[in-house]
Image 1 (cartoon, one colour):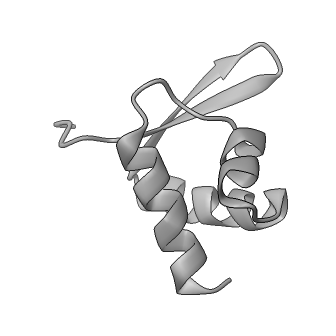
Image 2: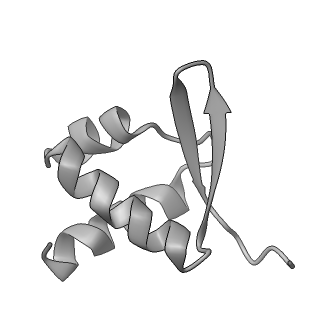
Image 3: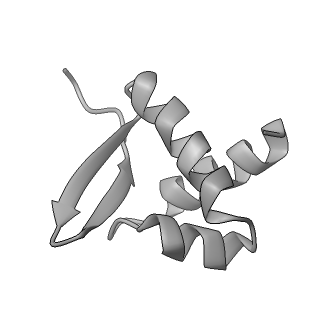
Amino acid sequence: MRLEKKELVKKLLEKDKEGLTIVEIAKNLNISRNTVAVALAEFKGADLIRIRPVGKAKLHYWKRGEKK
């Protein structure tokens, strides 16, 4: 995955306070759902995002200076 797409996902999550699904991120940035899923998996591995399940969907939030 190209770094610039990952950076676009990061910036979108940083701006949004309500949380976004993979589909919402993909539609907003006009990139594939798979590309978004890869970026989110990397962010999750680095502990940079929170994920909240809502039914079948998962909302993704950028961690804003939260203490562990």
